[in-house]
Each structure stands twice: as structure tokens, then as C-alpha cells.
Length: 248
Image 1: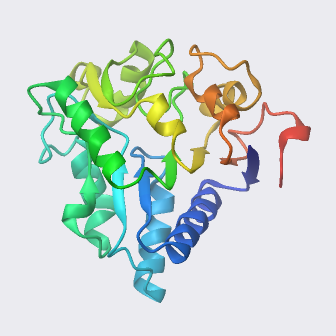
Image 2 (image 1 turned 90 degrees about the vertical axis):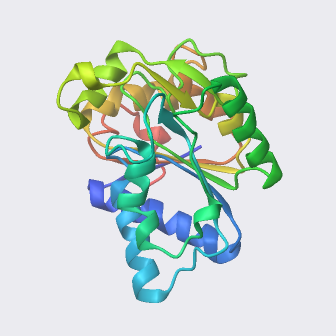
């Protein structure tokens, strides 16, 4: 695990975009695992800029998003389908058929999880997975106590996660209580992983992920066992880390 400390949120996004762009240049038909939320927005903005200015080509790229709220259709402005279209996909030359996001409206969530796993397997697995981290150290929507062996599955969101996500809604009561999420096992099978975090409110979760015990109580801690992980942080998110774990 490498830990990179940057001066700002924008610099964090730039460093992440460099890695993603490099992956695509080296392997034009890369399979990317993508995350939503405010954390990766700077990375998406940088990737769009590289596409527009120097022609970074997404035409052969396939993407799989981590999660979606259950009961939320793709046209809902709060859905992750909508988020990805608004902030990324509509600005690049990716083919719609190469974009994959869990179906939050699926009648059979178990079958949807199996379908999603089969799609990932059919593409040969994920080459590069981008992750954020929750204040309780969740990755995807894999909350504390979720088994590490889980693949794409239904999750009940913790109250802490619901409260954190309520900033995107009119009030906390509008936040869905369930989601479908790529599981820890699926995430760990990616060839490479980038974990992004910014802000002092993520510092304790980052410490657990990087320095804590490997336990389902802190789902991101499992990344300590992955063969190729880069953790990219701003200074505030890194403030609890000891100096000896920092690369630059």
C-alpha cells in the first residue's frame, strides 16, 4: 500500500486522474470500477479535461460502478446513474453499452447481484477500482460487519451513512435505507485499487484503513492485504497517519 499526501482536494483529484489516464493509455480497453459522491468529482473533472484537450479515448473502456440506491430509478436526480451521467459519462466518448451501474429498481436484488457479477467476470474482471471511504470506513456501501466474502449484494445503510448522505437530499428522511453494492470480495479481486479521501472528517476512517487491524468492523482495512493499492489524501484526511506510512 502506497500513501500519497497532496496539498488540496484538487491536487488529490489530479493525482488520481493521472493514474486512471495512465491505465487507459496503457490498456485502451481497460475495465474501470468507479465511485460516486463528492470525493471523486475532482478526478472526473480532470479526466474530462484530458479527454477534451489531448483526446484521452474512452471508446473502448468499460465501467462498473460500485453501487446504487434500492428503489431509485436512473432518471432520479439523486440516483448514482444520474450522478455519473451528469458529472462524467456525458462529457466523454464512452459507449453507453459499456457503462454498467447496479439496477436499483430490480425486483429481485439477489438476481441483480448475480447478473452484475457475471457481467464483471465476462469482461475479465476490473483492472482499476476507484474507491472513496465513509466516515465509518465503509467502501462501496459495505458497512461495518459486512462479511469480507460478499459479492454484489443488498445492504442496509448505517445511520451514520444515512446522516452523511443526507446533505445530498432535502432532509434525512428522503435518504434510502437500502442499496445494492459491489461486495468486498469483488473489490479485492480488482488488479489495482485507488482509495481517495479528503477532509478532516475522514481522518479516523483513513487511519483505520491504513494502520488499523484488518477487521469487518472497518471494511476498508481489508485493502491492507491487496497487492496494489494507492491511497491518495489531502492533508486533513491524512492528519492522524504516522509519518512512516507516507510515501510523498
